[in-house]
Image 1 (cartoon, rainbow, N blue to C red):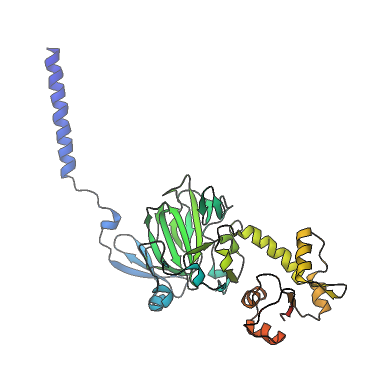
Image 2 (image 1 turned 180 degrees about the vertical axis):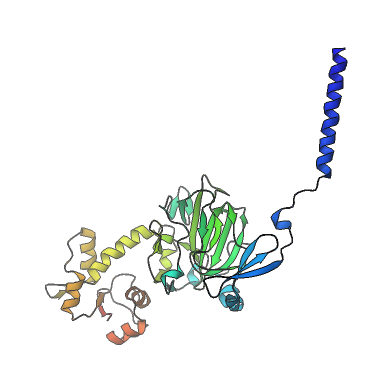
Length: 354
């Protein structure tokens, strides 16, 4: 008798399960937001004159920037433009690039926004047997990630090569910024973005051992240390115009080391006189390496020359690099020194800059 009751209970449970499954099968599936009709229904003005917001019938929205559509045919956004692959300059070799490229980064502080602020957890350089071509900054899953500069999205999809959800933005000066391991992308390829716009949300997708932003800067697919340009801990940009040297496209060219050398060198470059006599480039470099005290302050050096600024040529100096460093033109340096842009700069030569 007990066995019979057990069989009846089992049969009832079985029939109940079938009934529930059948009811669920008949119940219509809840549509996803992306599957609903996306029809524009209204626009909203913003504080930015060239930006509006479009509201859609499926409770989504997007930016609308008609003024930026004039860039659709711009060469920077048409040549080597690939929305399916992360690399788009496969036909360009490193040796095809100039020794120094002048990158105009911003006209005002509003032209830049840090992608995220924080201490750099893993720097640009060699990591074991691999090259780490960017910087890693820790964050929490869902933290907003911002576009560093104005530009146009070239790539926005899940990357199977280890980057996870990834966004690549090409900027008007040819620079590209890469944002990887996002939990979700907030833009699509072809979108125009403004500095500070949220382009995605932090995560740990792809080959990642914890939530962080992997951020890269590249020029013609060649990577260089982003810390040359951005102080991530303070969220500040270092330069208005940056002299991007071809030597920086080297995994061992670290911004931290280079910036320290530049700071030391600039102190001596502006103080090229000692006891009324000019120091040679070899003497300046020897003083830097030995840690000897500075011969004069910048102010004292300028006072001795009536406010004029001079530079003593050291190895790898070029007119274009000096023009960017001192915020002058090559033509001005040539005019003040009676030289041409093709003149070979001799080590130790003293050039008047202003």
